Image 1 (tube, rainbow, N blue to C red):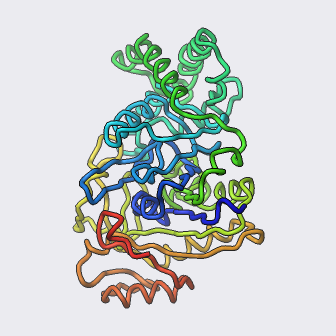
Image 2 (cartoon, rainbow, N blue to C red):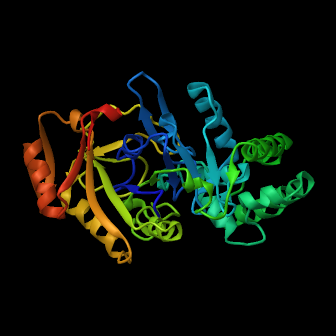
Image 3 (tube, helix red, strand yellow):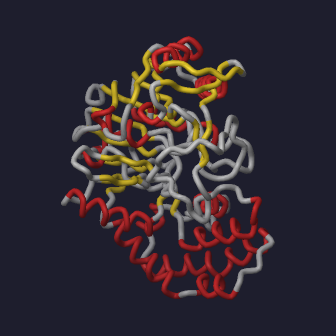
Length: 400
């Protein structure tokens, strides 16, 4: 594929929050299309510019400040309400509306998926799963019934009246059945929100706004890529939250590693792919679930993952190289990569936050070394020689 000479995949190698936004920004320019190949609006990827601009990306690719286009693939779940808020914020920051393409098979999150998600987490009390409350998993659950699934293509094809009737069926028939399945009796406040006509009208407006912004394309080889010299696959969450790899139920209903990337690479016709598995210089987890090497006394500054009622406070720990390298090994082992030329890379972000030395675990032993020795240990244990590092929050702090 001559016009797409450079293709890079950015994958989180832990529980998310590894610096994927920073790395996507570092590899993007105005000739780039950023492909969102998993997850949905619950992703939060921070990009900070040297001129002071800062944005946490949810739908739009993290190369947007560089003029990159975004492609929401069929593996992405769209949330028109969240999309509208983000579009306004980015339009205000860039004075232009970013270019976004969407596959018609993208699933669509409704307000009732979000409400169900939040009610379910509330009902779990101290046994919460760590959900963001954005309705992603509930969207997947509802869409397992083909008569209740809602896609971008459905919204394009349906007249307003038909879409209203379809949404009424979700609200009036599906939601009560799902609540019964979950064993939840909604409070009066939740019942009022579920029945609110304002939620329906707001969502209808959001769908119209969404369709007025995105360009729908089924074939990934259409103009999305004919004008692009670079492709960046921007992953969301991390390998340890993968639906088939993480610790159930503290996972996401998404393939967070190479699976969807490889499928899309074959569809597009890519021959070469640079794969970057990313980690911070320390470990984090936002939300409930097992956390090897967690250290409650560790605290680092993080202005994106603020404490919230759904995920609580960001948790910190020391990096475990055994866990990191095994997760990456399994990600590669899942794939058939014989038709792609692969360049394997690692990325270590936030090195500026740990001081001159770094504490980490290797072969079940805790070690403290200088950065250079730590990076050499990573090379030896992973077999990957190319390590990208970041000593700050902006693109200029990244050493490629």
